[in-house]
Image 1 (cartoon, rainbow, N blue to C red):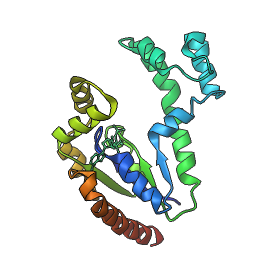
Image 2: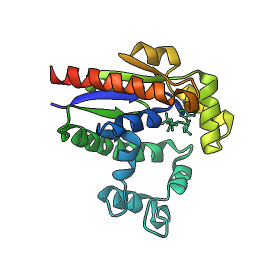
Image 3: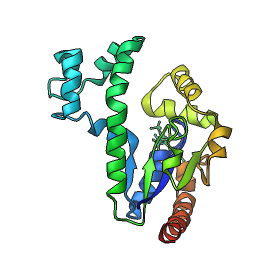
Image 4: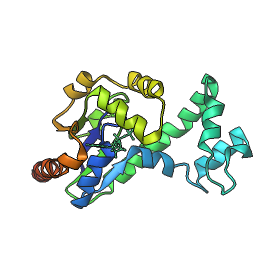
Length: 203
Ligand code: ATP
């Protein structure tokens, strides 16, 4: 039985940054966003289903999924959106569980942006929240993707609020400080948690 540590946080909070620090310690990372891309990879059965439904235009010239086109097709079209979600969600869930339970390490870090929103907390033995101030979240997320602030605020509104997220946490990593200064501290905190999770998993 794999000991699963769910790692979550709002958009731009630093989930990938923190997951990378666990990966440096040799901990396997299963990232929900990556699995979501794997299930529709070039040549996958799911991608064929999508092509059958939306037509060849949904493919890029190199045979990969044209995400921008697909997004446009489901934008404000509830029927198409549900069709796609009904196809993808069970497949993503199944593939995530397969990857989680095939690990042989003491524990695994499972990075899920919508862990709480999608009621996935019950699959975790422990929940680690990356916490930052909403203002910093907006700043970092908009700088990274050159996204409009309004768009990031909308995504934040669709996610649980900071207090709700924190109420689910067994452990919290404060990522408010600037990486240039706080990286050694973050590494120390991750190392402490690594020892804790290893111990808990072996119990
Ligand atoms: P998302 O859910 O939006 O994919 P995330 O939670 O995985 O984001 P990251 O991608 O790790 O967050 O971080 C968001 C951006 O902020 C990245 O550009 C990252 O380099 C930067 N960042 C993360 N932590 C810090 C920090 N402590 N100081 C400065 N920049 C940071």
